[in-house]
Amino acid sequence: MAEIISQETKDAVLAKSDIVSIVGEYVKLEQRGNQWWGCCPFHNEKTPSFSVTPEKNIYYCFGCHEGGDIIKFVMEMEKIRFPEAVKFLAKRSGIEVKYDSRSTFSPQEKPDNAKEQYIDLYNRVADMFHYGLVKTDAGKFALNYITQRGITLETIEKFKLGYSPADRTWLKRFLRGKNYSDEFLAKSGLFSKKYPDIAFFSDRLMFPIFDRRGQAVAFGGRFLRGDAEKSPKYLNSGDLIQYQKGYTLYAFNFAKQSIRQERKVIFCEGYMDCIAYHQCGITYAVAPLGTALTVDQIKIVKGFVDTILLSFDSDGAGQAATVRAILMCREQGLTVKVITLHNAKDPAEIMIKFGADTLTTEVNCAKLDSDYLLESLSRKYQIDTPEGKTKFALEFFPYIDALQADIQRESSLELLGRTLNVPIEAIKRDYSHRDDVKKRILVKKTEENSPAQETVLVNAEFRAVLAVISDTNQFELMQNRLSEDDFENPFARQLFLVLKKCYEAGDLSFSALLSHCEHDGIKREVTESVSRGEFSNCSRQSVIESIEQIEKNSLKRKRKGILDRITYLQSQPPSVANQELMTRLFEEKKAIDEKITKKGLEYGSGTGS
Image (cartoon, rainbow, N blue to C red; front, side, top):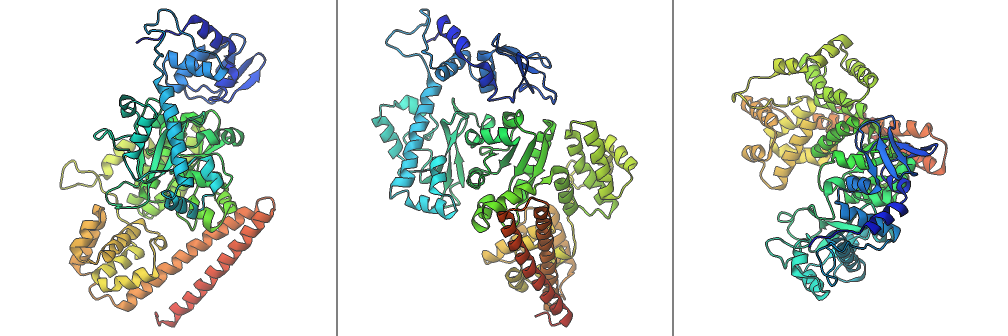
């Protein structure tokens, strides 16, 4: 069945569509005389060369030479076919779509409009899931969970959060009762491909995913109860006729106005983080959808922002995602900052513990990406050694590559030189010949083509954990006094977490430790230390002193973080919220000072108790 939209409909769409208004939803436009100008959405540029001429109802880029009418523009931006673009614009302008007499369907048949039909289906299902969360006894436990995480009923309503029934056959029976065919439902993404009567989402907290018009097009579902080993924490819709996750951002429909006004956007980890930001009044936050951030997702906001703020998890995967995102955003010519949360693991926890003002302050204190990368690399490598300096520089060079301006590159090379205390000429030579440098520092492996291992930083923290491995009876003492957040050395922190996992499993044997450790370098250091008997005569008193020193250093780092936040607040215009937050920060600083003083006296007494 072929559909040919009538010329009358096409002409009406072109005549009634406001090209400036529609293009303006994708590109920030400014009027100059009879034309409107902006940065082209089809290629990277900083100086606007993309024009819209409403008189002629056309757009054209003088840089990449892309151009056409509003129908072509919608086709390019929405990645849809010509008939879908015409229908998209017709619906927007209230125009009836008519078909050419050459269309090969009978008057009784309706033309294929699958995308809109699936959008209607998803909106209906989203309404049902929402009702199940807020109005049924079955959804009460899910409602309790989300409200205990600080999400208000108003926010639940705004984001239309829902609950999918535990009965996995219910949804199919219900939709059949509404006259949906099995063939249509099989392609909806709502059911198992292997077992077509079984719902894909069941007994989960549901997050509808909306397109830029606010229409539900997909779902994410969070696991809440049952066997966590057998169920992924999140299930997400795959690509569908109405939804491509790489071209969609969660909450963009809610955030787009604020993004345009603020000229900035927050890319955060997931649904809950995004919702917490919005509830705290930070309404320019969006999230990728069950995948790493893509260039196409960056391009969705690129035309409206000057600055990207990244708010990903602080774990290894989150840090790696942050670095990838920094490079992609810089390649698009955007300024990037990184939000680092203090005393909480995510925005929702900040919201519950400290309130919206604190989360706002954390956003305002975001670090420039270069500072974030340099601090991260300083923790990773020993920059008092030539090898450490070299590896540090090689890992920073891709950031310089991503910068779009020569001035930025030059300044960043100078900053790197100051950080490493290395002459700028040496930095520039290694930057120009990095491939040769990489070859020179490769360490010979037993396997000829095996990848180079990351050097493990063996400092006092790491040695303290090694000492406990030699006498695992002392681990209980360490875990009662310390948490993973007290370790600055990421390798010591990782080894501590491995020990903790073994302790909770009731098996602190050396074989269990090695089986749980995934880092080859750490395994090697542990094996060598135990084999040499390095800490076989280590006393309990020595372990206690090491723990106390780690505690003290951790308190000092927390104190510095508080002082940095106080300094920032003092530079801001006075307000009641800032004054209250500053008072609380001074109280936290005082409590930390008392702990540091007390522990200092204890260390001096030599009791170690």
